[in-house]
Image (cartoon, rainbow, N blue to C red; front, side):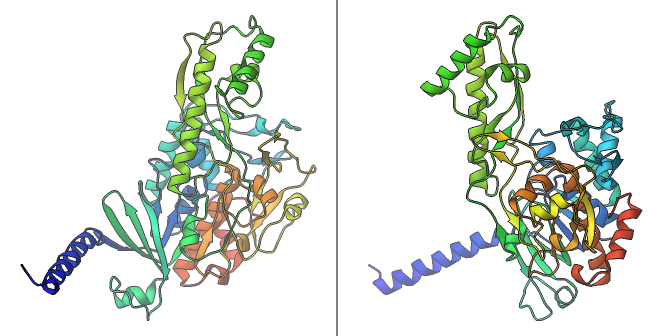
Length: 459
């Protein structure tokens, strides 16, 4: 028998050999140097990447999912808005180009923006064909020269300097680039050296890896799971009182849950789609999985309930979005935090780069949503400082995780505003990269001119 000390040595060698072999599998297969990395390919990320690339910055767009568009596509919320306020257009640019081309190439129709909506702001939202929207967005990226990477997420980010002890970087990389971002995809780990980062993840996920502070309340707004049940119930002949009684009984005995049809069964049958998902969260893989599972279980419950009603026996689940549409998770703390008072007063700053227009739209778990509209003539704005992560140079944020308090964010999170903020962040990132400067050091008028050249409307 071998002496115990020799066995220990042999075991240790085999263990470290196995660890080295395992680690070798995660050695990056590719190391790239670019100007701008945008994380998240939703309503903010696509305009950010396209704007940066059109300004001449070498740009990579990293998207964890299988298609761009975010809540507009995977979340099934395919009616972006609002681009118009009080009889005039206030948001245009790359996001508007994306929407307009989609409507045109799918033979859709635009709302009549000359007709005031009053309290019915949704009348100015634009229905887009989801598959066409994805294709047009991908074309915009390709034509601009954006490198689009699906199924890939950032797993680490560190600021680098000429003195950084980085074995993966050349001396030139350490001198010329500000960030080292490690991404993971199926079977691959990659390293990206870049000058500027733009977080459009919706959750501030990349910003958190960079050490930025994030904000979040204990209670968050419910998400919405979009699906479509096709049934053959004649609503004109439906005994609505009996159907509602059956619905309430199903709630009591647990066959259904609150949020499955929050407006009652008659309203649900009118549209046959969507339910609230309370506590919806997609900020981690575990939370996103659980949120989607709960949304899908609700759809199955409603399908079975509809099939139990007279005339609903042959009901089928006709379509279902890949993801629950999540309204609220983390917001990144910026150099300025937009407040509710800022938003409803239409405050304009010297560094305002984008307009924003939507009611304060906080969805409550118990009472649903009761939009609070802006006073006539009021249009909010977003300053550059709200796109700059506080205390973290060379990191911008845009989209749902923009620096704002909860009430302001309930209005700022909508798609048209995310597009405008994303384009602004993309312009600032590209100019900073090309000028070898921090975004906070840029001339604001230069950013505005770059945005105007791409059709944006700036304050």
